[in-house]
Image (cartoon, rainbow, N blue to C red; front, side, top):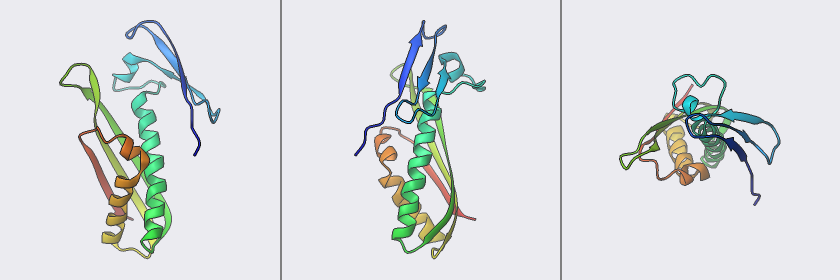
Length: 146
């Protein structure tokens, strides 16, 4: 299986410094990062590790759910997945990812609400990114058919 690479070039202190993260394997872009903007409500055009984790988790979960729906006898027509990743204080000092909320709305044939919910739960458990984030205390799932 392949290995994917991202790189970050950072200059300066945590509070005054900034950096740029590059999605090196795909070459699709470089994105600014900054701790003050990471900790602010308004990202102001700057990404963060939490946003990048949210992107990875939503994409991985969508792929895993597509497979689970198919394995359960359904056909996925469309899956709209979002991941909300929250940065919060760590009781031992510093910060940690305190919560992740996965939300999916799906159009599938061949599964009822219960079958879709079961497929979504299995996808959450089996998604490699979910497994990598197992140290997050609070990962919730809101799955429904539309």
